[in-house]
Image (cartoon, rainbow, N blue to C red; front, side, top):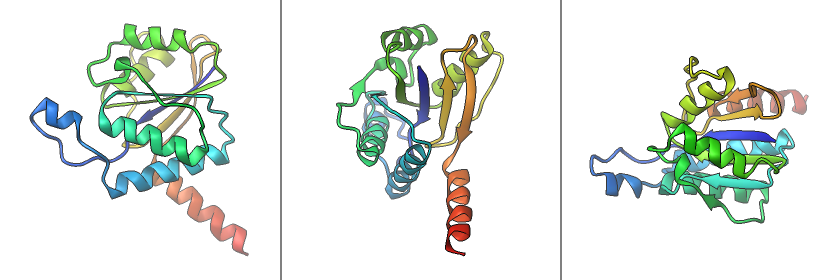
Amino acid sequence: MILYLMRHAQAGTVRENPVLDAKRSLIAEGKEQCMLMARLLNALKAPIDTIVSSPLKRALQTAQLVGTELGFEGRVEMAPALGPDGSYAEFQSLLAEYADREAVLAVGHNPTVFQFLGRMITGNGGAAIRMRKASIARVDMSRHPPRLQLLIDPRTARLLAASTAKRARK
């Protein structure tokens, strides 16, 4: 399986009340980040056959927007393991559940997403990998330990898109 691990896109201001914070939605910049990163996945010909998201609104919106832009026809599934309080053991169970899939897009939160990524690719949790909002990591899960193949954020994706568009025009 190829795992595309994504941090949710830019949302509104963090709320102190956890109930209100869970309902925070994406802002305009976050929606643009989703479209950009979905175009990147399309350019990479990512064969996403399953999308799983944290149940929090901002992550679910990210997953749905990216899925729509990809032409994903399935239903976005929700998994508490991808929430801010998800544990690595729950995340491992989630991966085992989808192990028969070709490519899974999993959308979650800081800091769990980058902690899970670091722990997966080192096997012991020794790596701290920063993932900015809407970043996507591509991980080959068939390797042991899983191998990080790509980590890209919207800022870099914009630069790549701009440079290739200029070259294509000449």
